[in-house]
Image 1 (cartoon, rainbow, N blue to C red):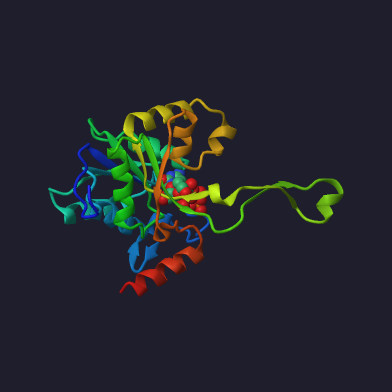
Image 2 (cartoon, protein in one colour):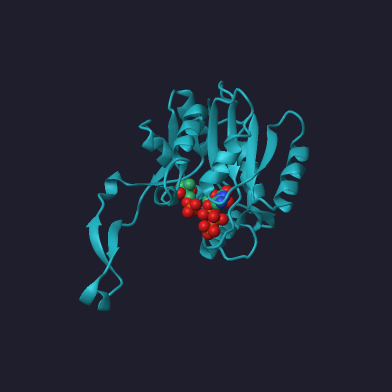
Length: 255
Ligand SMILES: Nc1ccn([C@@H]2O[C@H](COP(=O)(O)OP(=O)(O)OP(=O)(O)O)[C@@H](O)[C@H]2O)c(=O)n1
Ligand SMILES: C[C@](O)(CO)[C@H](O)COP(=O)(O)O
């Protein structure tokens, strides 16, 4: 594949998880509906995923009681027309992992590769989709886009006893920054491997489940190597109001 977006040889789907509530953004509506430059975040993510030209199907997980995001997907599918990827909508779950699992169950039979993407990363360039899809085509069972970490990362623990009067937390260690990466989406997988990993996670206890923050973690737990390709600063996740402000500024600057 080149950067000019041809379809991969293996049947490939994109899952967009858009069922989160956006508590940290604080808009009081599902985050995927929050406008960026006049269009909901999900519409930006759909345009990015479809524009990359790699997917035969795009499966979107929306909040269970949603009608607006479902309608948005339906209108988008109509605009794309018949030759474009099939757009499927499923009700998401309580956690991001639950939403991914619901979408995996709705992939067309014969799908070999899946790229799992956050609706909350609306400005992800096509090139990132291409790099992930290409690594899958080259034989990776799992691949994540990532960028180097710029801050020093430390682990901490709550303070106890007299130390608690000084501050709430104390440093317990410093990670080697050169080895650290900030991992983005879309994350790419062999569909069968990701399904197995999710099935295993369904047997885990609540503490382990609560610690799952991405799909690659599940794949790591079954011992499959997770490969890394370059991410992009513009693939950042809109989590807080400041992120949305940055996204608005970037879109405005791009005209
Ligand atoms: N039950 C959930 C939770 C999250 N997501 C999706 O996973 C992505 C990353 O999650 P995050 O940025 O944390 O979104 P929210 O869960 O909406 O945010 P918050 O944690 O602030 O409520 C988002 O596209 C979100 O819609 C999802 O599909 N289903
Ligand atoms: C999947 C993810 O975007 C990779 O960086 C991230 O872990 C999602 O975390 P969130 O807390 O659900 O936003």
